[in-house]
Length: 428
Figure 1 (cartoon, rainbow, N blue to C red):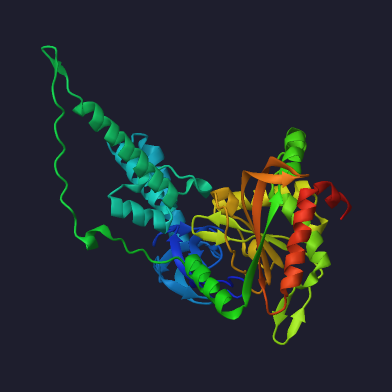
Figure 2: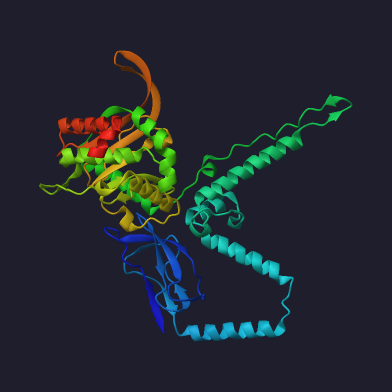
């Protein structure tokens, strides 16, 4: 009897996916719960497991195909399971009886199996980069979940290989002294310029990247976005972190970072200026008196914004542990739709990449987003004296349709005051 493999529900507002990778091949036996295929959606990757035991009789949707919820992408033949089991037993019995496997074939079989496993564990993008570079994917060690090879792994391998080759050429090309004289190094052959088309690469945009592009354009077209700036003296926060970082790490197993201070300050400011925690719903303003704070994280396939639920009830340690957990899940491609769903306000930290100033784009339907930037020592006047302080520029982008300039500036000033005097947040 044949059972279909269908695309499951993919989460709120997600209606299509792309076949990223089949983990089973046609003719392979499967058990209930075995992961058959990985689907790439605009938010996260989704694994589809077998609902029946049997044999993967047919793959209908191939890798890179776009599919929709409810589409049939393959078939499992349950009637073939008995035959497969019988064959497996016969093979086992024969192998046991012979007790004399052919040594010469073992290495070849192991190599083929290793190469197949490596290809199965590589992401589609990693395989494309390896193919273009003429690299056998099995030579690359994977850093992703379950040892999966990512695009970054392939690029790092190629970069290391290029550096090693250049080093070897340099050593080989070094002239050896003859009769006390140094021979000139041989000149490198003149490179022949390639045609421009030969120096181009066309890569299909991932669903996540397509979604990011679409949502950024929609945000600019649908919202009246305006950005206001301020600067924050980070001196007291830096002193607190220096004083308590070791005890904090020892007690909670996580570092005391910068973002947790801003999460706390933002929530206090949102309570004072509730429109920045609201959204527009038709002709209505929907006020939200809960604080689900999105924290933007840079991932390989694009920016993701997992959400700290009820962040107003979280301690500094819980906020830091939540951010660390999301960062680890993002690096492994393990974020779920629930991790990303919703959010009432977003914080994005471009400072970790060295950004000094930027204008963040709203994450609809939210009406406010706070951008943090690089901390740099700058001269400032304090009590009539010129002193050097660790300063950070902050930027608040807001939807001018419901948030006025006055309250946006006051909101940002409130955040500045709280971060500059972090002890006051203990009483907020």
